[in-house]
Amino acid sequence: MNTAPQVETESSFRPLRCALVGDESLLVRCGTLLRDRGHHIVAVVSTSEQVKGWAREIAVPAHSPDDPWTDALASLKVDYLLSIANLRLLPSAAHEVARLGA
Image 1 (cartoon, rainbow, N blue to C red):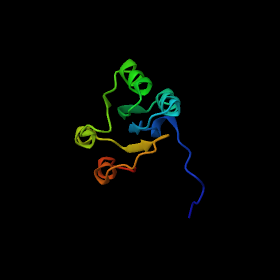
Image 2: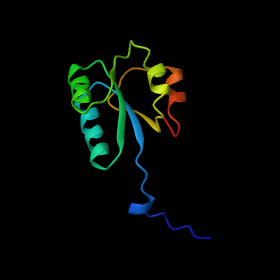
Image 3: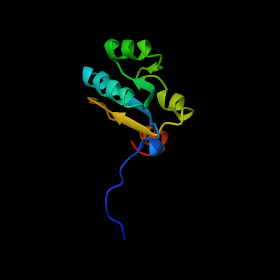
């Protein structure tokens, strides 16, 4: 039985589709790192105008936490929902939006 960790090669790389929730500049930094590594940001949920401005700059839909954002994300085939520097509880429906984890 081979217990060695799997090494990701260029041929095995599959970009992830991520939705980000949070209000601080840390979300922007993490989102930038994800994009730099070839992953896709498909939506941002934030009350911060700075964060929503960044989302608009990269042509990603930005939602307010008061909007029905879980409905909007349901059609985006999100792999991971990442809560970054977010102090609000996520609605239970948010956990069902992500196919691989929230």
